[in-house]
Image 1 (cartoon, rainbow, N blue to C red):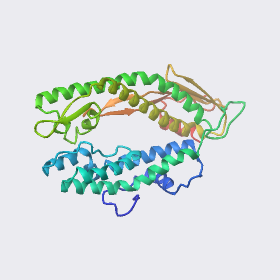
Image 2: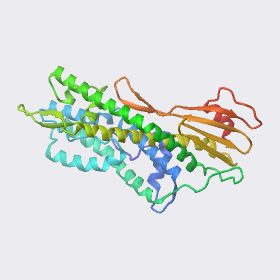
Image 3: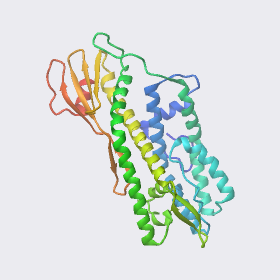
Length: 349
């Protein structure tokens, strides 16, 4: 589906995100939303925006392409121009960029591209505003835990699962912070070496290829700029860059843990929440495990982890490997070589 017709750079929303986008568009204030559904909608909208803005056409509106067009037209680059990396940043992008087009971006080619990008982003403003407004109508999780003596309705286990996952996530947080801190310091060190070797402090000049342009965005957090003698910006490390690295590492780790909790909760709730019988939930955050035991004597233990990986271009991303252990089916039979697909087949009713 198209979010709004006749938008030149707007891409078709992926089918698996279509229902969530339409729900947001049709939602009215006062319409209550269960928290698990709200979390899924937020995730779908975020992913849909990422897909749309990373499409072949719209990707051309990133700041590095715009700066390049300005240089081609003999104009000093507007280094404060930046394309939104989140649907929640679209309103600010449109407001800020409108002023930049009046004051600093005069290049015909850059102006044409930026205006087209703004047109493509406009329909996301309403979606972002509604998403923020929804928070006031989110229905929190039901209180109570399922036990063998007191079975609970289907889907009530989200709270218990989330609590155990959060304990596990806290254990990952410190290691992730250290990994991110090492990563950011390594990028800074490589930037300094590249700048010395090529005789330029401009991140755009150093990393303007599509494979490396993400480094411009990351490094901009640590750099100050000022006009040099030739009329171009000269960059240097901010005096407080170490504290910025520390702050960014903590935030990146927090984002990773939140993503882990949301993804794993949704995955486990699908497996466990469909069973209309009582269940015991027990966690071991030291071993990163959660165990489930059902009234019919079936049970399993799931082991979770967060793995911080890097692409061949040095861009960080997360993986959330999940393995199942000690799986006992109704009747006492042990499930050999358990996988997520096998678990769903046996436990999702």
